[in-house]
Amino acid sequence: MQKYFNIIRELTPIIFIIVCLLMLLPQTIFIRGYFDVEIRAMILFLWIILILTRSVICKFTFTISEIVWCVFTLLAILGAILNSKDLPLDIIQPITWWIVAIGVVSFVRIAQPNEEFIKKWLKSIVIGEIIISILSLVDFLNIYKLSQIVSSKVQSLGTLQNVQNFGCVIGSYTFGQEMMVGILSVMGIYAINIFYLKKHSYIDYMLYTMAFLIFFPLLIYSNDRDSVLAVVISFILLIIYLMKNKNIHIYAKHICSFVFVLIGLIFILCYFNILQPFIKKVLTAGTSHRSDIWIAVLKHQKDNLFSLNFLFGDGFRYASSQYIFTKSNGLQNFHNFIIDIWARYGFINLVIVLLYILYGLIKSLESTFYYLSVPILTGLLAFDFFSGELITATFRLVPAYMIFYISINIDKDSIF
Image (cartoon, rainbow, N blue to C red; front, side, top):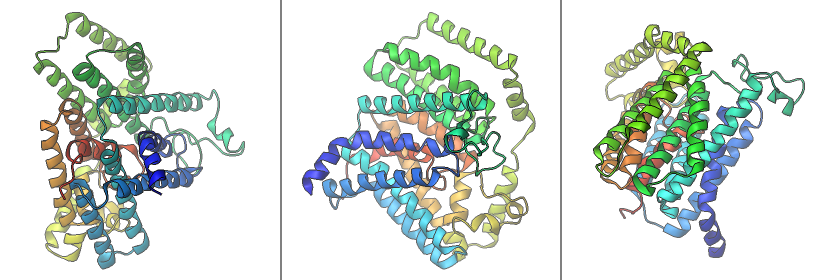
């Protein structure tokens, strides 16, 4: 048995890359309805393989992330038993999240990823996103309908009128989030090349160009302000690190080239009327009822201090129907990871997760990966402050992406 786990240990980098690529599919091409369940089952299966391998190799030693997510899951299950109105799902969901989070941490413990591997991983994500984007554009532009892969009678998903249909969802928020992940991955590759490898290959330049010309327009077209905010914050922090590093020289020709390309891209986006709707939304959409949701939850929690619901939450499924505003407007997402965790899993779990994230950020500032993890993790936290996907969006890449950038800084050594 040990021999088989040693073989799997050698394959863990490949398994990790495969499972991350699979997590791109349910929110892009294979949107709910066709192959969705099969893909999610495969994702869980691969995470479980990594967890079992970690159990054999690392035995009964534990890191901070493992302790945090085990305690979180136990408290979430306890809260479901005490308060749940949909017991099976409210127990299954935190267990599923535990598999994903511990799967990521297990990979970090087994593989001890360095900059070379992280660059390969990020490249695989960028290439995967490029392929998905091209396929989705083929469907979106009616060159070939992806629904034909399944059946000639199935209508392509298009603008998400029917979530049981098959196809791409260009223009949706979830697709925009995938484009955000693609752009952040490109930033990560660039950061590793600048700060660590000190060089760029021709393939790197090709990825920069393709990503800039494909991901950025599709991100703007999605009108997802949260994702754009994450990209902007990460970009600004990366520029700050570049300017503070005395060993890195940014020449005027580089700045001029970047500005020239950016202005050209903005002109193209305006010409095809892609940028104007996004600007209009930024200026006129306000908080899109986010503030109303947050106020409703905070008021409810204030009126029920130290109740079982306050301490342990109302469960994954039932929480959104507990509040008049979300229930009357048919909303299921709290659009804020702090409010989301508090409402679904309780105040105790909220404190645990916030301390975990804060500790992860502090350790990121001190780590050798600071130039990589701080900009990207900060951008993702800004995104999730207005989106609320951490933990609940189990099969999307964004939460796993966040856990990875925390874990590489705090989980390479066990605490007992």
